[in-house]
Amino acid sequence: MTTILDIKAAIKQLPEKEVHQLAAWLQTYLETDRWDLQMETDLASGKLDNIIAKAEADIAANQVRHIDEVLDNS
Image: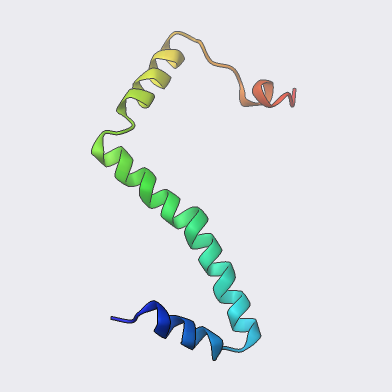
């Protein structure tokens, strides 16, 4: 298993361009991939069931607005 110290040392040996590529990848990983995984985990565990049920009830009762109306892009 590689430690954080090993990773830091390896990063210091990378060319600057690769450091920037790694930083961009890490940002995407933290913002998107991890978020997607958390959503999948929450969905599978039932954590989102109440929110989904409320949304479905609102849709069935026609208690929704078009996204352009909400964003004032009409």
